[in-house]
Image (tube, rainbow, N blue to C red; front, side, top):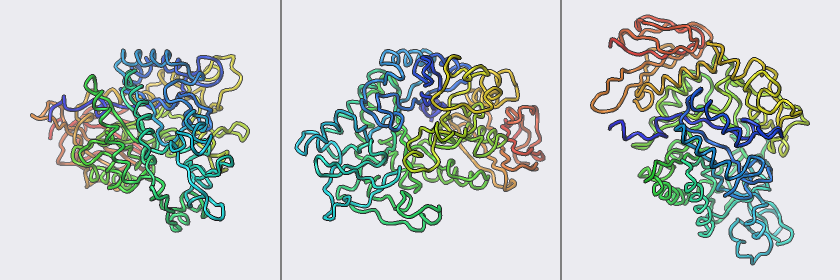
Length: 550
């Protein structure tokens, strides 16, 4: 293996941008693509990420804030237009930042022209572009499938006397990927964006697109329903074996990959799939038997693991064991659907989590605002936007989608000062927790992320190296070695990452590793030589140590 065999999506860091919440330039309280353009220097120079992933910006009625797509090949005027997108793409590429966009293949908006035609009459040519079925004899839905957002996954259409399937909101009818015309149309969408120059796709709910062709009932899962304290009838009360993840899905992703590979002659293109599957063997199948499907299925194991050294190590080790030969790992600790790190674990542990994310083997994805320690924001009932809470009365995702906090000025620098109301409220602490203030504070979360990102770029062992966990350490600590794998052996020295998950000091002895030099500490006040035979980690401290005598 040599250095040139590693591609940008393996050695780089991906940064997720939720466009509504990143930067508003029009004064309507909602972020836009021009706002991303204005912050490209921040992304490329101040922070130093390698790629950005843009959540949906397509024309949409916004029933699910862009994940209900009404036109797959345009930009919603709320965010700009195709010319704005092209300028964003060129500006990012000029700064050597790749651009990944969301692809939403499972469902469209019910306002998409395809669905408007499909529901017009039973004999419309596009009727079979979506999943329609007759009622049961008593008029009830065709089967027991449930919507992720609550209730039946089937919506009755009075005009045509059939139900249509919606795995999410009723405004998001599922496309019928068993129809070759649908495949061709969606693959044309992929080509449209590749022709414009995008570097890859994050595939929304990638495993949902193929269902059981016989529409069989899902079996009940009462044990899980009881264990998570939710009433029967809710989504988690079933084994979802027929409404998603049918084996035929892999043929779709082989075709998808062929398109990406064809365009990769110019430069490497990339795909990562949102695959919420927690059976490792099943999850790993999305790489393809010959690594010919998705480049990576997203690995969400750390999102579901408690903040405990043994649980986190098990998640990492299980992933390493599950990877197919040649498969590349990845990690994510936050996104637009999950509580923020500082709220989940507390600020001290969030610093340790930053080091974990940026030093494990594989591609890390960083959610906007985590680099300054943004926390979940309590949203008053009259300001709630998320359809999840509006449809189901469950806690919604608004608290972790609030506007980026750029400075201490009006509207945190997110919107112009004259704007009276942002699409979601700001955190109360934005005057101190913001980019501008943290750039001036050498001990801040942002400076920690900058040091970690800069150091990661300088160390081949962290970008592409092997992973080896160490056993003889306190149970509240996770310690591992990263070593470059390029042959012949590179000049890059191995590094040790030692993380303390507890709120107490922990003594560690690694006599076989000799002497090291602390390159980065989560507490930013520690450096110089360290005797690895006898050292201590302070509460919630993490350190990266270069081995100089081993």
